[in-house]
Image (cartoon, rainbow, N blue to C red; front, side, top):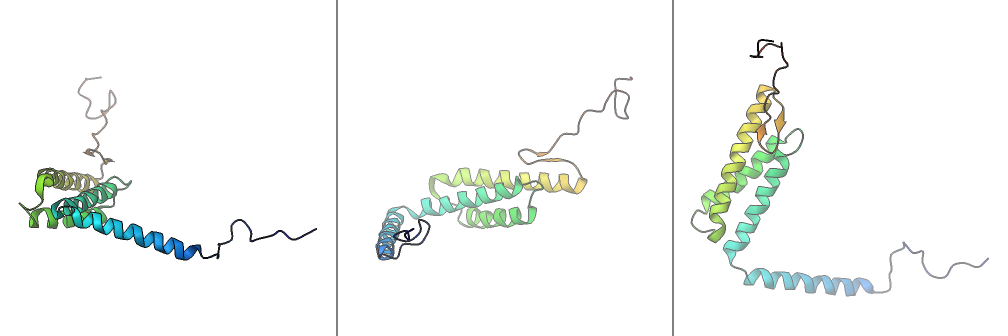
Amino acid sequence: MGKPSGPPPDAPDDSGDDALDDDALAAQVEAMRAELASAPVEVVVANHCYGLFELAAVYLSQQPPLLDQARLAIDALGCLVDGLEGRLGEGEGALKEGLTNLRLAYVQIDGAQRAGANVDPVVGAAPDPAPEPGEPGDDTGG
């Protein structure tokens, strides 16, 4: 039996492709930097705000919600949106509305958790199920 020729299929290739990969990566980074430099700064900052919005929403939607993490993301978003008021371009209204919605969702979820209620991450506190007939709270008289 002869030895297989060449390295195993999963082995790293040391044939000099690293330099090519580094050059390709450097070219991609330079292209991204040029694209970023040509974009209006308010658009770039607004995009970062949208990222913070999504981050907060992810933490709020966990079971159980990760309120400390969500609060930091919401506060960071608030620093940008409130602190840069009038400077965020066309997306500012949507960012303010999103921030308000996140803050409201946070308060609802936090309140529900403190009250021991089930939490629906989409709308806050889940409604209490209707009492079964004959249970306390049933107004049907059954």
